[in-house]
Length: 390
Image (cartoon, rainbow, N blue to C red; front, side, top):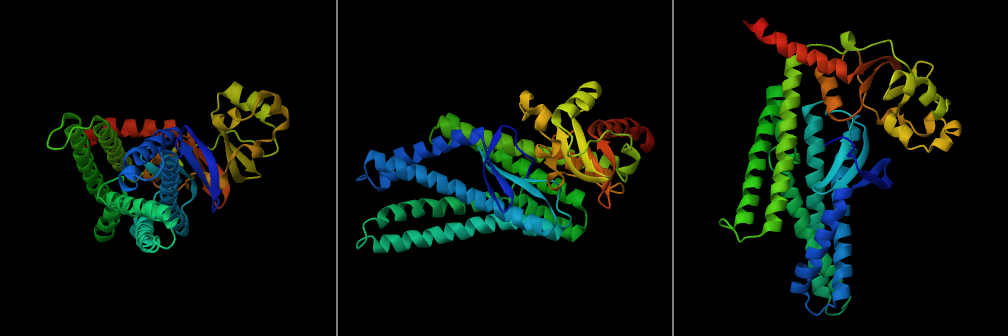
């Protein structure tokens, strides 16, 4: 579970959640269609024409990615059950990622949320296998069912593989979150649980990368540079994600019991929802070099306007576009309370690229916490901690 992935476009909205496609998804989509049309389906159905094989392959790839969306939606809907806001799901080269504004509040919440995705993939996989068997049995009397049998025969095993892969007990995979939830629930120590799950993720990433090297150089397995590079890329991604979790946990341990309130600032600039974009740029962004500005109605936070939001507006529309038309609404923002631990703020900064977090109490915006302030505090703690331990 990560934040919004840069370089993506929205293609749909389901249950109020944006479905985005990252540019890297296009690469893997064509790779998958090519593999299906040149190898998988021709081997099983040599009588199909090349055109038919290509069309069925494209449909199969689309249905597979639809099942990935279903997997992520399952995570997202369970997360919502525990008051975790999910703003978007992004399909990219390695699958899907749901954007959460906060980490799970309890071991039980994490366990249920993490389990929901693989469970959904298993249900889709078993249902597809059942459809394939039924279609194969009936295709003698209904020839058109051969296509259904072929597509279902592909979707069944691939979804089961996705479920098994995600259940590997290492961050950032779902199995790593399940493992963390189990250890967290038993020990009541989230930090220790995170470290164990992240180390498991690093171990698995190393194995995947080694497997990729074995493919590239033909060690034990048949030589295949394309597969080797793909496995190497997956291993690299998993290693970075697991290492990021360890780094985040280390930072949380550095800040200890520090709270948000002492580091937040109450001297900040805000704007109203009806103010035009041009006025915000002229009066706040340019003279004060602000990259994000809270949008308030009275004292109530209703959104945040960022440089990225402003860039969506053409300059000739600045004078007639109000802020609330392009801002990020409060429901999609990561926020903190004044009494929240600074470690919580670190988690939420890790899930977004925003320069600040709004600090909210009883629905009122009472301050903002700047990323630079937290980084400065962490650096200072790291410098003075060794002296304090002597």
